[in-house]
Image (tube, rainbow, N blue to C red):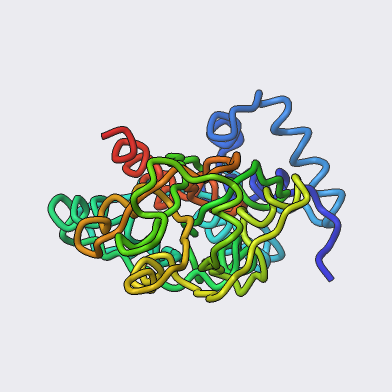
Length: 300
């Protein structure tokens, strides 16, 4: 068991052992000589040894002081090194970031990945599957640096911080061969009369559309449930299904897949793309540097 001793007294001991001078120790520790002398007196009483004897105006360590110095000095040095503040992150050195994403948020991150490849050739970005909405444990222990996900509401967590990237709305997509394809608007009765494709990244049995329908005491028929946003529009080809999905991606595949986009006939809140990271790492220079780059990118 460690002895109950003031760490400041050990700092005094280490300094005095190395300088052999009360005045120099007082200056190094930003103390008055009187305060330094009083502290030395307390340390002598605590350790029951004179520790330093003044000889020819020099503080000479006793044999006991020489003995404990072999342990105390390295320990103080180790503490000093261990308590140094973080060094700034150097983007010119080799580094990697691991980011958990859904297929859709990985698609959204493409411009950022291209930017990093062009400007930071020594930095690699590893995108891995986001297996749960907010993987708190993996963010805490460093297996993940960030998680990039989407939500429809403000999340509250004691351990997770978030950076909001952008928000977008939903549209409803159908095949150009769908019976409703010639309509300019989509009624709620038509919306409910046809079967739907549900996107469920975490194997949910309902989505935001079902939640909003439930508020007006309605429900829809789900014919197909898929885990990924990017593949879902391909299931609309040659079918009479409806798919409600993020507009940012929907407009990219409308022409190649022969789709028609319509306004959903009910209020659906915008989704928000967010970057999540753990509070215990909020001052990590590596993470703060990345967030700064991410922030600049998101404003482009």
